Structures are given as structure tokens and as C-alpha cells.
Length: 386
Ligand SMILES: *Cc1c(COP(=O)(O)O)cnc(C)c1O
Image 1 (cartoon, rainbow, N blue to C red):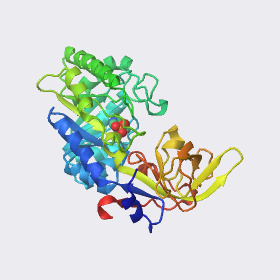
Image 2 (image 1 turned 90 degrees about the vertical axis):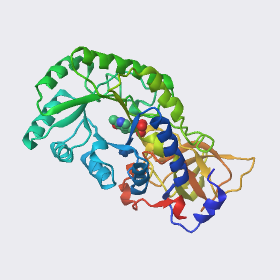
Image 3 (image 1 turned 90 degrees about the horizontal axis):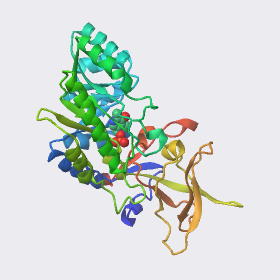
Image 4 (image 1 turned 180 degrees about the horizontal axis):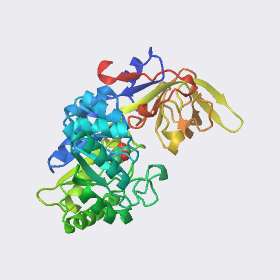
């Protein structure tokens, strides 16, 4: 529950807005930093989870690198102070313009997802007369046991070089004079809470690393991606992911030579719990079969429920907590039936004007906002500016 002192400070503000708890962010970053640092691991923050300037600055200050999925994210990371030598650039569809820009910045590595992309990067690098650092993204064929829309590491997904192409890839690489292979990259999916998934990933990384080294290619960087999940059900009692347990799995199961570095790309786990979407009840509709709470926030502010039936905890910050609760379908104002934040949500008796918090919305929230229905630009409030 967002405490009542804070809720009173929301009283005069126009809703909806994103509220960021900077203390939760700081504690999360410190926990992740400590657990990775003591094992000598490198963490790149996945900008796509949230590229809010204020949050980015804090993440940059703690010393993490950046993981980008577009040329504009690379530019944004550099503008926010991340050094190019600490930036990776991933994505199945990098355009020539994006590759050219990243080449001029001499970033740490392109995570390359196909043979054709390798050839294009080699050609563009030769035109610029520079060498491109590349990590090959290998599809590990590990099931992340998560929603099918956020599973990325199976053979049927569009991501990574398919295993059948790796033999050819290795020979193409030998011919690419303007490419320096720095390592291998893997990413199995998102919102992974079953640690055995990461253990299976380690087994695959070991196999593929040996496969390359047996063929005379040294692998300096093992980038195991991101995907660590958070507890959407208990944002207060379990606000910080278990980074110790997570990094420990890789420490124990990833085989490393002294010259090999281990890199991670965490998004959600670093920023999800610090954010809440705050909105007001516009109307209470007591229907024949359902009670609806109609909010002034909708899928245009937070798309995850509509996009992948994601669960977010919903709280009424204004109503008096009572034993009795009613079940509401909590919906937004957008003209789409999928514009629903939760069905049969137990809440205290709620009324027009009540403040509603939709929790754990710091990742893939603000960044997915759209102007559909010509909605207002999204607003923010930071806890340290209240
Ligand atoms: C999205 C993405 C990440 C971050 O995933 P999270 O689940 O937010 O940790 C990391 N690496 C790549 C390649 C990605 O596409």
C-alpha cells in the first residue's frame, strides 16, 4: 500500500500520472550493484524497460552500462552520460542508419541476430574504415516458462541466430575483416521467476562457448541477457528482487576462463517496483452482472494488461479499509474492450474521485504509453520532489 501521507500529497494533482518512489529505486539498484560487483559481473540496464531521464541518471550514476534496442536509445544513453564503451545494441531489425550511428560512436558491442546482419555491419564498417565489435546472439532454445509474448529463446521465436546457421556463421565471421567477435549473447525471455530456467541457460552457454573455442575462436564476453522477474502480487513485502540468488546461479553454473567476462542486461528487475500509475475513479457503474470502476487512466498509459493479460496489483488510496470488499472490473476510458486493468478485483467500497494506484508499473509502463484517442501526454511525480 502506498502510505497515506504520500496519498494526501497527491490530492491536488491532475491524474493520471506515474509516481516513482526514488527510495525503492535506490535500494533496488544498490542490491543489484552489490550482488553483481562482488562476483565481477557487468550489468547493462535495458533502456527499453524505462527511458525516463530522471531514472536513467540514477542508473548511470551507480555505474551500470546500457543495453539499447534502437539507434535512438543508443543516442539517449550517451546523452544521459553512459559511455559508448559500456553500451550494447541489440535487435533483430537494425536499420543501416542505426548501425552507421552506433559505428561512429564505437559502442561496446552490436548483438547480432543473423548472418545477413553480420554482412551488412561488415560492409558499413568497411565504408567508415572502423572495426565493429560484435556479440553473436544465439537462440539457446530454452523455455522461459513465461507468457508466450515475452518468450524469446525458443526455436520458433524470431530472435537470435538459429543453431543450424552457426556453422555457416563461424565461417562468414572469419571473412568479415571489419568485425571483431567479442563474445556470445543470449536472452531467453522476460519476467522469469523460475531460477532453473537460468540454470538451463548456463548449460547452453557453456556448450556454445566450447563449440566456438574448439573451432579456434576465442570468446571474451558471455552476455546472458536479462529477464529476471519481479513479484507483481506483493510489491511491498517483496519489493526488491533476489539478486543474490540470481547472480549466484550464474556464478555456480557458468564455466569461465580467467579472460572471460560475464555481462547481464537487466530491465524490469531494476525499475518495475519503483513505479505506480496513479489515477482517479471517474464513475462507478453497477451493472447487472458486474460492478465497473471506470478510471481516468487506460491502456494508453499502461498497456501491459491489454497487451499480455499482465497482472498488476490495484489499490484504492482514498477509501477506508474495511473487512468488506466488493469485486470490481477496473477499466479505462479507451474505446477498446481490452482496456481493462483487472477483472473481479477485490477493493473496498469505491466512489467517484477516489485515488487508485496500479502498482509495479515502473517497467514497460511509461515507455509504452501512446496518444491513441488523442490522450494527454503522460505526467510524472517523483517521491523526492513531493
Ligand atoms: C528486453 C530485453 C532485455 C531486458 O529484459 P528484462 O526482462 O526487462 O530484464 C535484455 N536483453 C534483451 C536483448 C532484450 O530484448
